[in-house]
Amino acid sequence: MAGYAEAPAEVDVVVVGAGQAGLSSAYHLARAGIDHVVLDHAPRPGGAWQFRWPSLTYGKVHGMHALPGMELVGADPLRPSSEVIGEYFAAYEERFDLRVRRPVDVSAVRDGGSAGPGRLLVESASGSWSARALVNATGTWDRPFWPRYPGQELFRGRQLHTANYPGPQEFAGARVVVVGGGTSAVQHLLEISEVAAGTTWVTRRPPVFRDGGFGEAEGRAAVALVEDRVRRGLPPQSVVSVTGLPLNAAVRAGLDSGVLARRPAFDHLTPTGVAWSDGTRVDADIILWATGFRAAVDHLAPLRLREPGGGIRVEGTRAVRDERVHLVGYGPSASTVGANRAGGAATRAIRRLLARAPVPAPVPTPDRGRGRGRGVG
Image 1 (cartoon, rainbow, N blue to C red):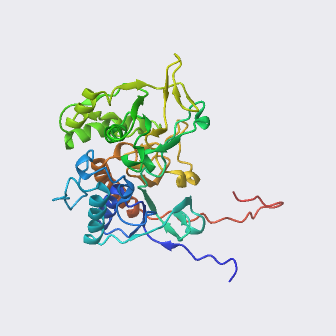
Image 2 (image 1 turned 135 degrees about the horizontal axis):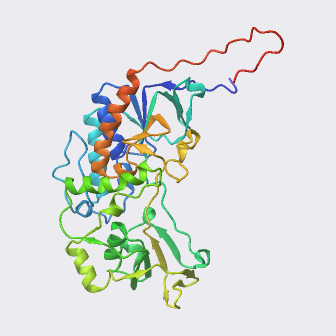
Image 3 (image 1 turned 180 degrees about the vertical axis):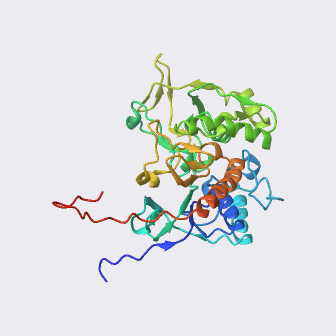
């Protein structure tokens, strides 16, 4: 029948995303006996890890914590992290019967509508769902941040981002400028420098190196440093950005050799490279932007959750502007240890929400007075 739209499936909770944050949330929801569905746009288990470059072996992973209820043990540190963690997530889904639907690309989350009063309508090309609460666990991988510099469109070489970094072999014999001060930039430089004709490292701020281990206590301290921005409704910084760069043997060697000799941000791009305001120039064949990611929350735009500062104000995991929406893996929970904890916190808050009676739809009252009736609204 032309124009017919299938009614949305009804569940108590929709979880969007099946990375660390989404699986952690689903685990806690299942243990609480809360009816839910997990929607994931990726083709297979593994979250964003499945898209990481092959040379990022498991031994190089920065601060990976196990999912709740199942440790990751016996992993070969020399295997690609995409394989190790992808297999771990797949085994986790199977062990706890987390029936993830994929690929489902959520396009919008709306208030009410055909979902009914007090409910959320989660829309996708694969169908729609009506829910009393939403756990948004979409992370950042789908929104790579590309800075804008004068002359960027004039550069005749290649420009790549960490999101599509193919591994060091693509840079053999090339002159490469790596832009960014995070862990990914350092990892890229260390392996590219072994095959490239030359590398230049550019960061906005001087990098801070951290000597010592990074355990759960350090992870908690880093999470705490991010919370203030989110509480004020500002765009969140990544947890990694406040932990500093681990000063391991490979990094020490890079510092000693000059590979990790950092230059300040350049002023503009030229057709053949980059240039600073003092006239200094560096020729380049490839510019690799290791400039991070932003929260993938565009599908939440119909709910109008953003604050004037540009971010979504969150208390705990709850969006301040809509108590039905919980953001896990956002801001202070954008780390593996933070996501685990946030999944449990979101579940506890949602259980309290579901225990309350749903708000009934308002019933229009006809105007029984004399004269013209008044519109309801």
